[in-house]
Image 1 (cartoon, rainbow, N blue to C red):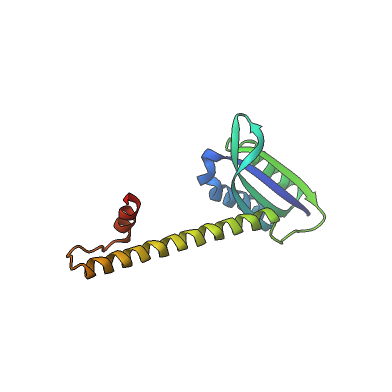
Image 2 (cartoon, rainbow, N blue to C red):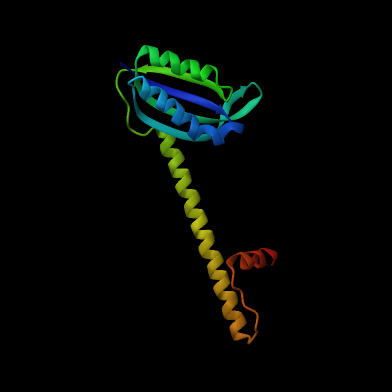
Length: 157
């Protein structure tokens, strides 16, 4: 069996089907007594140039170990799947199980996004608490119970 690195580009309208496609290809590989060493879902990315008037695609990287027959079957599955825009299969000398730089960058971006969301939630909670204190000090009966309402009020101001 030989080691291969496979990159597939899936049409952006079919991004929700990517996990199912990965499972299908993984089962095809294991049925052929192959192994999947690594799967990385890089998500939607801008293409370097338009392919059939498509500017964005969902990228998936797989490092696999398969026989020639299984590889031919896998390439055939790519060819007959309308959602797969392009695929690239490269023979590798050995299995590469470390995470790629592109995937590490994707993980960093996701972490930054989670941190931004966390900070925004903290700011909303702080605004709600300040507003609640102002209302209590003013002797008003109005209370702000839901952060969503406080966020809408803060945006309106």
